[in-house]
Each structure stands twice: as structure tokens, then as C-alpha cells.
Image 1 (tube, rainbow, N blue to C red):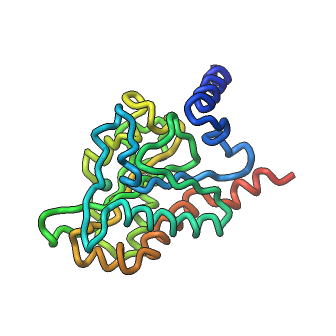
Image 2 (cartoon, helix red, strand yellow):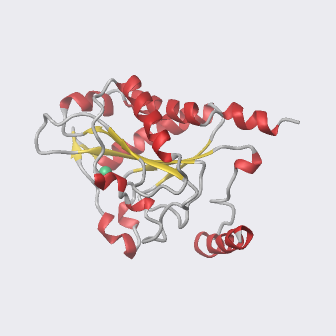
Length: 226
Ligand SMILES: [Zn+2]
């Protein structure tokens, strides 16, 4: 059953991405693959099933949300690659049935009052892996340590993030992918902007450290050693 699903999936990738292996599972090869999604980046390219996400998100401090999330994603990717991970930066639309060892959707919040401040992290409402909740906790801890921003309770809307909803959308995570979403802070808050715009390396470090704590490279390397 599993083999059939896999080959069907491989065919799907070939048809839709033109590159089999782009989303191939890699744990077997001893490589840990991390997908970092820059929220709202290239959202205009969203397919019809995701027409409602064609927006730039929030803005603040002269920046659009996608500029901020892409910047953090690129910095986190650099840190993770230096630590031995294979990292892919994804736009607003994820490839159909996207597979990785960990997926992190990176966003920033906005509110009409500049007093709203802090970050939040959520796993999917339905999590087939049973591990996303634990990863969300690790991420919240390391992000708080790195940024010293206030930890807010995640919203139900975050738990229902479109990329988590493989029942409804083709362009969503494969149910085997451990995925979480982080709202990295409020772009409308001067306090949070100090981190998001002036010290984005701290946000990036919070994300990279969480990956390393949850899925250390050494564990996979050790397993593969003869
Ligand atoms: Zn957003």
C-alpha cells in the first residue's frame, strides 16, 4: 500500500513539478530536509484553489509582510545549512503533497493598535504525525529565548492554516510532514519591529535552534554510520 502511494506520488511530482525527487523523502539518505515557507512570498502565483491567499499580508515599518518573512527564512536557512541541514525556501504556495522532515510557515502579524505585540506558534488542528505539537513547543521556547518577545496563545485560524489542509487542497503538506506555523511578531508594533526589522538574525536563530533541538543532524548521521 505504501509503495503504491509512493509511486503514485512520484508520478504526481513528475507531472506537476517536472522534477521527481524535488519532494522525495530524504530521511533514508541521512539528510534532514527542512522546508521554510516565507509567508505571502509570491502569493500572486497561488493557484485557483488558493485564490484567497493572493495577498501581501500585513505591513509595517515600510515593509510588506512577505519581505520580512523572506528575510527571516533566508537567514534561518543560512544558519541551518551551515549546521548540515538541507533547506528549501518555499513561497506562499507549497508543492502538492509537500514532504520534508520539518516544515515551518513563517508569518508576521498586524493589528490596528500598535500595542498588540508578541509571537505565537501553532501545530495543525489535525496532525497525523503526532509530533507537530511537541515541535511547536520547542519552537516557542527557542524563539522566546532568541528574541525575548512575548509568547502569545495561537489562534484557531493558525491551526487551520491552508498548507496543513491536505484534505481540501492539493497544494498542501503530505500528512507525514511535521509542520508548524509561527507568527514571528507584530509588524504594527514598534517593540516587535525592533526584532523583525532591526535584528532579524535573532528571529532566524530562534527558528534554526528549534530545528536543531528537535531533529539534531548528529542523530541521523549516527544512525547511518556503519
Ligand atoms: Zn501572514
